[in-house]
Image 1 (cartoon, helix red, strand yellow):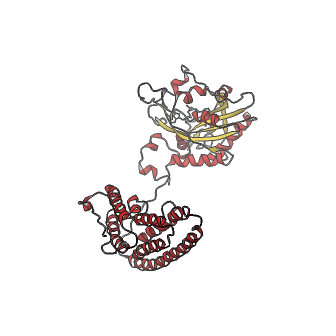
Image 2: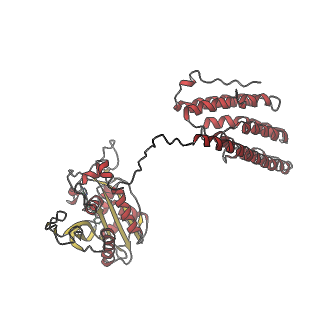
Image 3: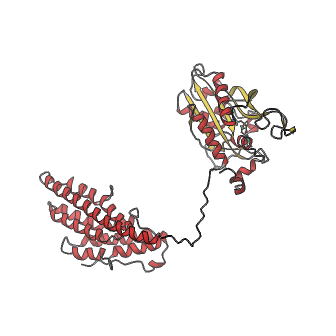
Length: 453
Ligand code: FA5
């Protein structure tokens, strides 16, 4: 019996996207036909139809797919279908007869005919997958169909034949691979001969955006003193962004951080907004874990601020949170000073000013002595342009976690204490690298980006 497989009429015109379904259909048709081939007597024809190098269906498909896709792999469901169809047939027949010894011979011939036809590493890899693939290879299929299902008295004999078969195929594949490899080496050698008269291809190497680099720098500093890095959602509920941070609905501080609300379908349970700071992750982290907590949270945040040299409607923050049973204001100042000295250099001085955040008490604003004028307010005989003569630069807000916040996460405010801080990364990067307009971070001008390889 000859197999009859029809290629789609416009095979040469079909796009590579339709290839998969076309092969899958051919594979299914093959499976049906193979299911009707009688065991052993029609095998010869079956294999020659499938694998004869000139006319075999598999190789025709292989070359067509390769021409369109550039590659044929075992991951392609249709190709797997093709290769496994005869195996499944042989396995089913073997099971019926009880003793599958002659079907081991069929399987062997099937594999031989396929392996012998492989001419390059790619097709050889398919042959190897057909044999070895853990989920769908012949090796495991024999185990599942014959070994496991064999009646107990036949099992030792089938097991022996199976082991012999495995040994044979492994050796056969190895041999074939060495043949292919030496051929491949030769043709690769011919292909790789270098033509020195051709101009080279310049492939520019990319780099991380400056903001990403600063994130990494800060993460490294905090990780080195025992903090871990967590990330959170950019779309938040008002509960996490405000309420659980002790900012009830009509609290005036919401005006400072009014934000973008998402348009939701009618009847949606809760409004959603783009987070205005990374502080919601304080709550999410404490909800998930008991003290001790030491995390930093890098991420993007959004506010309805009008763009100018120091404001953007999307910017970046790193939140920090440490909570334990014995954290004091000294731990807080020590940690922050350590960070600032690592980041700006040992010579900067630091100071705290009282401030207000609903979720910290006391709250502070943290300043560093201007690293550009050495904290003098003067530079090049005039007023320092970076600190505008103030000698100090405001860096970020922070404070000891307000006990009211612990109430939202079921921590015992009498037992735990901690500190939190929120650093605006864009302004920090501007300070450190002398950038005077925040907008350049978002304009993707390569002349700017290239300065920070
Ligand atoms: C907060 O966002 C608090 N969540 C910080 C905090 C965390 C305090 C934990 C206490 C404890 P604030 O609104 O000040 O605070 O913003 C923090 C930083 O974000 C600012 O210092 C500034 O560097 C940066 N920032 C604020 N608005 C913008 C903006 N529109 N563009 C760029 N950076 C901004």
